[in-house]
Length: 77
Image (cartoon, rainbow, N blue to C red; front, side):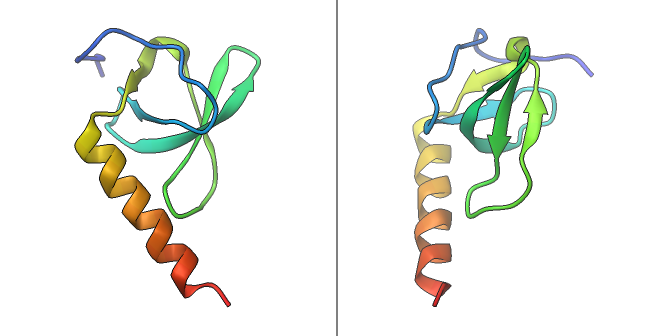
């Protein structure tokens, strides 16, 4: 699969980014070796993304991801 879209970025931990390989949005958790660690909004297992495939998340996707996290927090005891 080819990576299309904006230029690769170096995301800061805590920000949202898009995995250009499949379009998944995730919160940047950090880096492990050469890979960027992303976690889905609202929780779940992290996945590794090569830095050349990481793209900045557009504002609409960031808003959607934040709402997902807030809704998840509201359901926790």
